[in-house]
Image (cartoon, rainbow, N blue to C red):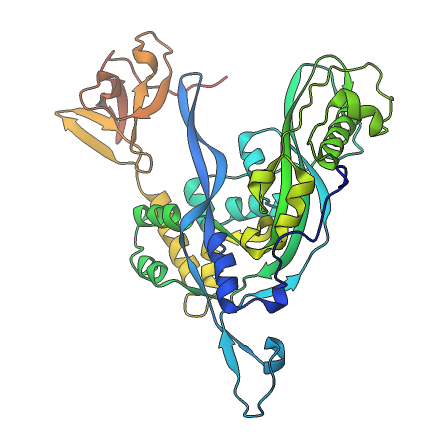
Length: 425
């Protein structure tokens, strides 16, 4: 056996053209292809001020859609035509065989970008879908992936840490889910009927996701993400070439070993950098699809992608806001406008004031339910304010209103009696 080449012809294989409705159903369910995607957010604290940021992407747990049955002629199914004119319908998705293997490298600098790369998303589509849709506006998130330029000559003059993700992709089929192929699930229909305010929109988004990918490529892929660290002056071209060479050496060996020092010369990388950099590159493969137990033995892993039971999503594009996809389905064309009207009405409302005693108020944000709070409970002039979890009885969150005349009011801290003012540099 050749230890330095991927092997084929091993394992059970079913050609897409021969797959039954039940087998396609397994593929769709295993990959949750009728579910949307959600943006996972986390809270960070910077300079005493808490803010919410997008950190990753994950599949929604509830399917928003079901696959419509479509008609097939006898010759489409590979059976004899009886001549009775009977056309049969099956819930088989629209697909094309797409089995051209390819290698791709992506550069990421944030956890969200890395999550998008690992979820096989196209950069531009996700940014447009999350930033431009009605649901995107409701969560206030926008994300993108920066694709690296392998010919770039950018230079890093300081200590830096980034992630390079190398993927070896072995697709099998490409599937399309457009408005002619989809209908809403019964549960999604009921939840849409109940949407009447911002809280119900938020519940819908958490349940069904923010955006949906209408075109997916299934198969298997191996990927490794390397946190590249360099000190001193290093050519971006050199670092990129070193990582590619290490990944290539690792992939070609049954023992999955590869290092920057050994494979750098094998990769034929140019010595054009002005000063050598300290490159710390280690390769550890992760698998999506195929037999994931063999992820660090690429030659043995490759043939396991043949079975449709092992197909997973290796690429996603034609990403659209979920609400827009719903609006393209006959009978639900009014849903996007309905959601936008609710969101616009919410934005025009006056901020609520929670009465907590005679002349004393807590100022609470309607969406986050967090209160305006004195930072760290300080009493000095110039103390900053922050948005923080509301706590009953917390004097840092108590405010007095003082009549300033002409229908205007001063806001004074219940803790210090100082006026709330707004200033800038």
